[in-house]
Structures are given as structure tokens and as C-alpha cells.
Image 1: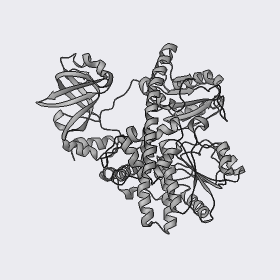
Image 2: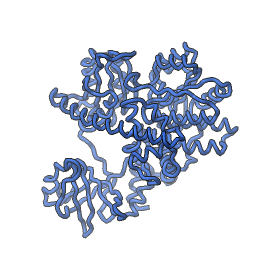
Image 3: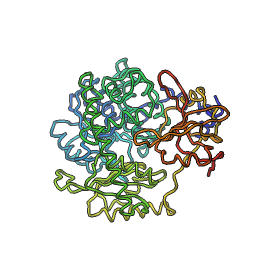
Image 4: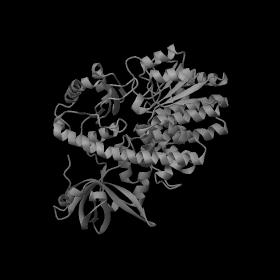
Length: 566
């Protein structure tokens, strides 16, 4: 391979040839046997017994992409086993994340005797107690962080369970559900080699699980890398009726090559939109239906929900930035903002945007409506996003006395709080953040993988880079430094509101097009050294009217012939 690609592998800590080979090939046989996952074998035995006894089962999934895709995997598996399971997906705005006692009481009243969770439950101590009181057999499958005490459930299935030794702890909730479905398929087939119908199901299930892996931003390494690589390929070659309809409304052509970025920016937002603004159960229906008309109807509804979500997001982001400026919060160690006007289903997205822009943890809180009903009436709902190195779930744990409840992981978390405790909570949370980073927010960091001349960015190199796909968490897209460039011609402001900068650069007689998203206001800076510049960028293939070119997607630039690095 090219020296540049070799450098990229070294940058990822792959120093031995066998490790590099496994990373590049990512064979499906590299998936770990399901029985290695703590709790899976016992869970499969209990579920299998329940199906044979004709007992009523309920799959309890979370409302995000990871939860609904994992729930769809288990629903389809149970149907193959001959069961007709119930499905429960909590409403984000009314019930919040995870298990809740009211839902368990309703499930028991409806006649179910066994509940299997997907992507939730590992921190649900009192809910597990309520399930036991109701006589429900509770099997928890999850991947989130747990508390000091584990729930008293019939079985816990978790890749990082204390006392376990599973080889890879970074699975998503959907991937954990896939492992359980795999174990159920093996038991139904009488051995490790599954029957043809279960084999076809598991290949489809890999495609479903890959959606949750990408959307939940878990590390795209080890098993996750394998699941996404083969899942995207299955999704392209043999999509289910529902996923085919979803790709159509997302503008993904039939049979087009799919990347993790397509899931992250096109498929996942549409799947999440229903849970943010309405009921995510519709998404499970979409993923499990075999009726084309029904799939198209749901997919179009999700598209409308996504458009509405985008409108809300733009308005709330403007509102949050204005609040930061007017209250002077830009000097706080962390951002803790609250408003009754915000939509509870979108606050997590805004928190992520603010954390990225201001380089500090950001928490958005939706204050309760005066007419709110139900168990959580009078409580404010919060969602937070973190920055590299700051464990958000641990910080919330340190504020436990000021919160009604909380859960999540280092990068993202949710919580509930009484409105009168918000000011004290803000003060305490900012103290924790300031102690972690006493010198204030660190400047945004841009990590460059390699320096290369313009002539090195060939179609051959991009074919090599494709072998490093899928890109995502813990395997970011390579970033190159290109020095000694000259702007060729006149740069243009393009896009809606002329927010982007389009220009051409040349070096040693070679010219390439560059696009700098959101940098139109830096046009004067770009030309300040008579067009001499250095780019931090990623090369991408652009196809237009049958013509293929290599374009540069610019992350940052400096004027002048030589880059100034730290």
C-alpha cells in the first residue's frame, strides 16, 4: 500500500501487520461468539422456554435509533421462533428515557409475563424492583453505564458487566440485541450453525444493528467495524421493504454505495425524528413491515417529521446563542441553559452544537409546561453533550443530590430536575467542570494525519482510503495538510445565504477544486497573502454528469506558503 495509507494505520495504533490486516479485512468471522457475552446464554434459554410455553412476551425498546433498530431485531427473531411479542417504546416527551414503573404496570396488565429491554435498563434499580413485584420476568439488555448497584432482574446482558470478560466492551444496544438474537437462532437450530432461514434473518439483523452502531457514536473498531461494514453492504444489496422506503425519502439511490456518513446524516435523523417529536414505535413498524404501501406511508411521515425537527432546531439554536450572549454565560466553565419555550425532543441536538461551538460541556433544560400531566409533571427535562475527556455521566453522578434522576455515558446524558434546583445545579456542575479544566476551555484542536503534495491525492489513494472505511467514532476520516498552494482564479461565496466558500488551488501545474463549508466570511483572510495558502482537508470523489473528479473538503486554512503548527 502507499506510504500515506501505512502512516494512517500507524496513526491508529496498528503497528503489527496482522493487526493491520484484521482491521482492513474486518471478516465477518471476526465477530465474537454470542455465548461469550455475559448473560446471553441464560437469556436465550429463558426466552426460548417462554416461547415454547406460549407465554406472552414484550420487547421494551428505547426511542432512539439504537433502541428501535435493536427492538426490530428481537421482534423479528421472536416471530421466527413462533411468538407474537408485544412492543413497548416509551414516549420521549411524556415518559423520558428507559424503563418506567407506569409502563411496566401497563405491560403486566396487558398480560405479558416476560419483558426484554433493548438499549436501556442497566441503571433501573427501582423499576426492576417494581417488575419483580408485578411478577414480570425481566431480562435487561443494555450497553450504557451502570450505577454502583445493579438492578435485580432475572438476567442482565451487558458487554462490560462486572466479573465478565467479553473481548470488546464497546457494543451498541442494537449490537447487544443482535448477539441475543444470534444465540436464540443457534438454540432454535440445534447448534452453532444456524438454519438457512435464521442465516438470512441474521444477515438482515446485521444491517439493522449497523444503524444503531453508527447513530449511537460508539467506537467503530473491532466488532462494531465489522457490523457496519457488512451491514451497509447488506443494506445496499438486499434492503428490507422499510429500509428501502427510508432510503428513497432520504435521497439515497437504489443500489448506491453506502457509507457510515449516509447513516449518520441521512438515515438516522429521519429515524430519530419520530422519537423526538412523536412516537418512535412507528420506526419499529417501518423496520419490521413486509408491506410496501405501509413502509412508504411511514417513511414519508418520518420525512415530514424530520423537516419539522430541522425548523425547530434552527430556531432553538439561535435562541440558545442569544441567551448565552445576553446572560454572559460564555464565560462559564460549562453551559447550563433552561427555557420553557424549547422542545424537549430537540434539546440534545442543540446541546451538541453548543458543546462543539464553545468547546465545553453543554446542558439544555426544557422547563415544564404549566398544563403538563403524568408522572413527570412539574419536572424539568435536561439533555447534555460533552467534550473530549470529560465524563458527563460521572459529573451528573456528582450532582446526584440535586437531580431527580439521570443516566447516560461519557459523551451524552439525560436528567430530570426540579426547576427550583436548576441554579444550584448550574453552580455545582460548573464547579466540577472548572476543577477538571482550571485554565478554561481548550482551543479547538485539529489533528492532521499526514502532509502530502497535491499530486499525491489520486484515485488510487482514495481507493486505499476506502479500505479504512467505515469512518466514525475512534476511526475518524483522515485529515491531510497541503502546504505551498496557490489560489487559482477568484473564490466564490456559494450555498444558501452564501455561507460557503468555493475556490480552486494549484501546485506544480495541478489544480483542484476546494469547498470550505461555513467559511464565506473568511474570504479576505484566504486572499491576504496574495492567494498563497495551506489547507487542512479531506479529499473526496465528486461525480457530476458522468464525470469524476477529486475535490477537497476544507476543515481549516491558513494564509501563506507554510503552515504554522502547534
